[in-house]
Length: 306
Image (cartoon, rainbow, N blue to C red; front, side, top):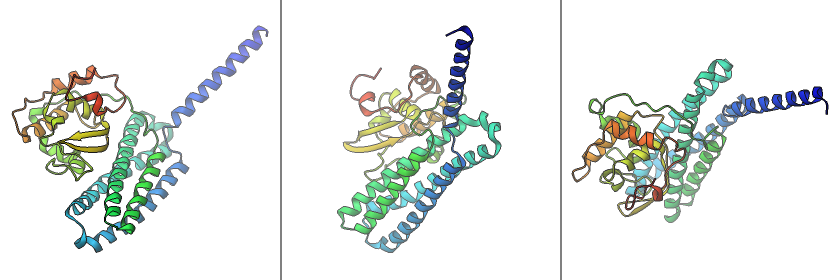
């Protein structure tokens, strides 16, 4: 192969690599066809959800207290999910219309995709749990309706870009926890899953008040907020299975400290405050972390995970 052929060959290889890179970059965004498919899946899910609401309202007098509580919480979670879904779809619509002008906002879109995907996952867990409870009560129709909704959320999560990737996000170290209202921040960011008073939701979402995962070694709840938590976890001798998203992209160091201090103050015992610097130091220590923690890694009853 002479010099000219070698140069031509290298140019072709370089062009292919460049095109492949461009394609990977675009894969983080929905095409118009993908966006329409996801909207159609969402419309179908909404129809099933409205049918479920009608059934619950009809049967409300016969439901046990735990199912009534889950039903109420499901409605709140659905509203939160819907807000995140609409925000995500709006961002993808804007990028489709504006093209490369939206490239600078790609990271924000990536984070919104992940956040919305996590909401889909949480709704799957909720409806799976409700389906099991109805199945045990012999309410086959309501169990099946919840299973259909769980499957619908699973389909939508699969259709959402980047839900299996953790984006590199800048962490906001600004602010002062003492100037923030931890209770209000908890209500905005945590209550939809963990209850208005951090009491948990049935056997689906664990309590945070008086939880050993909150009141123990400071770095444990900080790491959970920074990177999320997945898999089985035991809280107050009760086992829970699910997934909690990372809040690194949503909360600043000061906001994380304020929320955790609110929860620690509401719990029994005399827990020391978590400072903004505590959060920053843990974030720096685990700045290469790209996946959710597991209970075994955090190991609250043993040596700190390194």
